[in-house]
Length: 372
Image 1: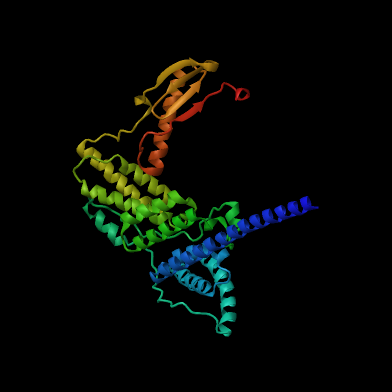
Image 2: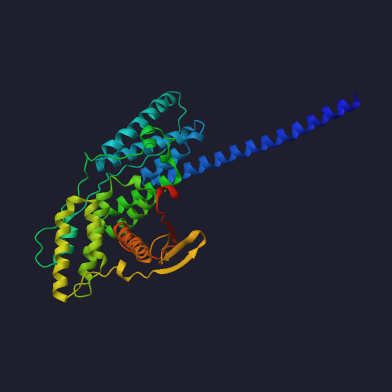
């Protein structure tokens, strides 16, 4: 009997110990949630006061699952929605407007009911300034004035309202869900940079806007469809500035590539882009310039070694190791083609080749599919 009592007492003690651990862990988790909510509230208020309504919306939505009906939080989110919708209306982004209007309607009904009981502490709302994101043709036209008799100047880029918007299945399924993957930190950071880029664009700070557009795209390409034309405009504007600063200097080999990439992003700027390309061709003739020298298959050094275990041979360049069972000539061609593709892709998307790859890219060539 005494042994049974001792065992029972021990079991109860162990159970109480683990219960205390679980309670402490649960308390810590709740405390972390409270801190996250308060941090989001403070950051949201700061962005709201600065008129950065889009940033306020994204930050507040990220913690909405943890607010436990916090009325101050919901009121701030409500006001941020209103400001963000006005910004979207000024930009003509009708599809985005519909999404946030639905969310605002949900908050409206709840806040109205609470207001009747006098429980809502309103958040002060500064006047929402009208947003206008336009590309002033006069600015780039002025930059073009140094060109020899330009026949056309760039027209104001217009957002293609009817352009199809490609989305992933997850986003389509959670279009109106604040808890979707679009509330990840990476997505929020991309949208914050994009919003700042739009503001810089509206302020005619095209060089800075271009940098912010690129940072946003690198973080999350899906945020860019509505802004890609303005990004292309900024890139072309930077080319114009560079060309005017180097009237008699050696041509920059990146100009042509930057122009072509920009035109692929915004085909409606084709006429203006062709004017720039024609000007570059004219300069080549005047100063006797040759085509830009880019790394090509002809100048790629290939080192051959082997055989290794399994009768593998190795053809190695600065960025690729090609493991193969080929003759040396064919292996050389594969290695050089790989380097050429790397250069072409880098120039197309980033306008520069950049540093050598670290780690190096490994390629294995099998004679047949069965051997893979």
